Length: 141
Image (cartoon, rainbow, N blue to C red; front, side, top):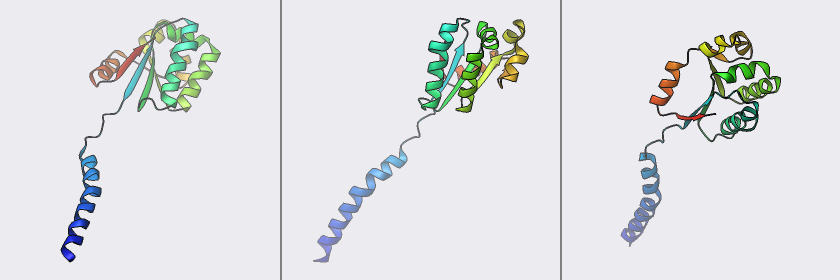
């Protein structure tokens, strides 16, 4: 009489535990990472597309990690536009890391201004290449 109960209990436990064991053995998905390359000096692109999307992607956790790279004419635009400066400060407060190309920023004479905004200004050729080689998604505005 006890044997059918043990068998039934064994089946019930197996039904409960096997799915959990299988889930535990599934590989952990790779982190999703986005680097946005902001090159445009167009204020409308900056306000209406680039920073809006980048901020939403980071704040809403659409990716595990979001970075914004200021490169080229965007450096000059950012240094001159107080509204954009306020926006990137909010973005940084929300966990988005900002970096800027030192060669570009220097060519426009805005390296110090970008640093004062809390942006890491450095050579970006190698870091961008590393992002690509490491599988980061790259979006350019």
